[in-house]
Image 1: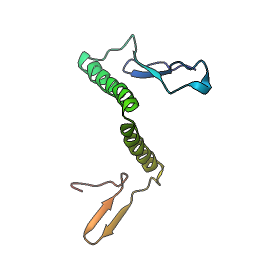
Image 2 (image 1 turned 30 degrees about the vertical axis):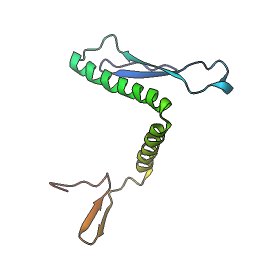
Image 3 (image 1 turned 180 degrees about the horizontal axis):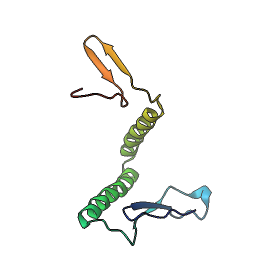
Image 4 (image 1 turned 90 degrees about the vertical axis):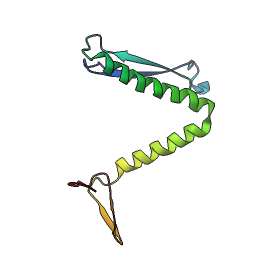
Length: 111
C-alpha cells in the first residue's frame, strides 16, 4: 500500500537493506527523501525540511557507531510515547508554592 504526497509534503522513505534472509537482517536501512513533483514550496522551506531529514538520517549512522547514543534517544522516545499514553486531561498539582502542569493544562498569561 502506497502513500501519495500532497503538494506541500516531503517524506522520509526508509527501506530495509540486505534483507533477503529476514533471519539474518542486521537492521541496515536506506534512507531517502521524496518530494511531490507538483510541490509549490519555496526553496528555503524545502532546504529546511531536507536539513531536518538529513539530520535524522545522520542520527541513524551515528547511532550505529555509538550505541550509547541510540540508547539515549530510545529512552527519550519511550518517555514521549508514555506521555502521549497518559490520561489526556489537564492536571495541576501543588506542592508548597510550586504548581506543576502537564502538557494538556491550558494557561492564560505566564505559567
